[in-house]
View (cartoon, rainbow, N blue to C red):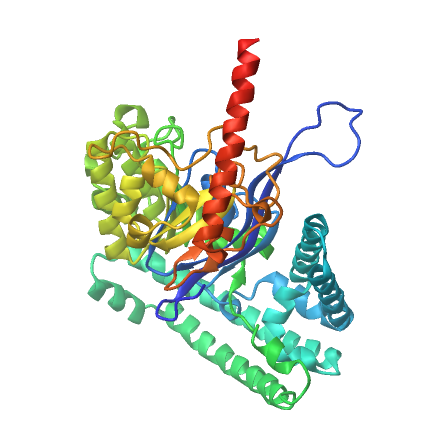
Length: 538
C-alpha cells in the first residue's frame, strides 16, 4: 500500500476500536457486547496529502480520526507515525521492548509455527463453517503475535537472529540510553526554535536571535557531542549485525526494521509532546469552543499549555495570536470577543486558528464544514487549501458530503460499518467506483440529469448494527451481488491496480458469476416481498 514517490506520515495496520456497552442486568454473565466502531483498518497516509474519508452517518469515520490521534485508545492494531523517528524521540516502550528480548523473543518461532498450523488447517477445511472458524483463529493468532513481538522486531530487526539475545539486549540498551539523552536535547532545541519563530517578525530576525543566543549555541554543541556517542554505539551494533547476515531468518527479520513511532505505545506525557504536531478541527463550531473564554484565550490556550509562551503578558504573545487570526480570516480586533458573538463560519475559523497556532504537521478535519451554509463552506475549504500550501500540512478530511470531498481530496477512502471498503485517487473514485457501496453512494448524489427510474444499487432494509455486525463482508446483507462466500469471509483491502484498493469478493469472480448471484438475490427479494404482501393481507 506504499507509494514510493511519497513519504509515509502514518502507517496504520489492523486498527480496531471497540466501545463496551453496559450490561442490561447485574446478573448478566459472560463477555459483554461491544460497538465495533472500527474493524481491521490498514492504510497509509502520505505527507502533504489530503485524504478524504466518506461514508454514511455512524460508519466510524469520526472514531477513526480520534483513534488515530489517540484521543480514543485503540483496541488493537498499530499506528506508526513518521513525523519523528524512534531515534529522535526514544520513547519508553523502546526501552521495555529491548529489555524483554532475552526472555520473550525465544517463544516467537513457536508462536509462528502455531500460526502456520492454523493456516494449514484452513487450507484443508472442507465446509464454509470450518473455513470461517479457522480463518477467525488465524486472524486472532496473527494479531496476538503482532501485539507481542512486532515492535520488538521493528526495533532490533536482524539482530534477533543472534544466538546470544542477552548481548543484543545489552548493545541496544547502551544505544537507547544515549538516544534518550540526545532526544532530550533535541526536544529543547525544537522548543527553543519554535518559541523564537513565534516572536520573530522575519526570517532574518529569527536567524539573528539564534546566532546571538548563548543558550541555543550551548545546546547545539551539546547535541553534537551526544550525536558522536550515538554514532559510536550505532557503529558497534552495525558491526555485530554484519556478523549475523548469514544466520537463518536474518533477512526476514531485517526487512521488518522500522523507525516509525507506535503511537498506541506512548506514555501520556510522550503523546502530549506530539500534540503540537497532531491537531484536530472539531465538527461542532460552537460546542467545541469554551463560551466563557475570549477568542484570544481560546486560540492561545494550547500555545501556553505547551510553554511556547510563559504567559499572556509576555512580549510577542498578542502579536502572534493576532497574526494567526489574520491567517485564518479573523480580524485582530476580535481578540477580546466571545464565541456567542460570532457566526458559524467565524466560529469554525476560530477552531482552525486554535489548531494552527501550534504549527502542526497533521490535522484531522472532522466534518469541519458540515454545519455551515454552502457559501461559507466554500470559504472555509479555500482557507484550508491555502493554509495547507503555506504550512506544508497533511489533512485527514472527514465528511459525508461527496461534492466537498471531491474538491479538496487527493485520495478518498470509503467506509462502511467500521471497515474501509475502497481507497483510491479522488478522480478514480468518481470515474470508476468498484465497490457496490461506493457506487450506491455516488448514485445518491442529487443530480438534475439522472434518468427516470434510476435506483440505488442496494437491497432495501435495515442497516446492520455495529454491535453485532454481520460475519464475512459487512455489506453483503445489502448487496445485490452478494455470493455465498461474502457471508463467511471478510474480504481484504487489496490493490486492484494503480493504487486503487478495494475490499470485495466480486473482484475475484467473472461477470457470469456476478450475474448469477444477482439473479439469485433478486429471486429471494421477490419471495420476501410476496410473503410480506400475504402477511399484510391477513
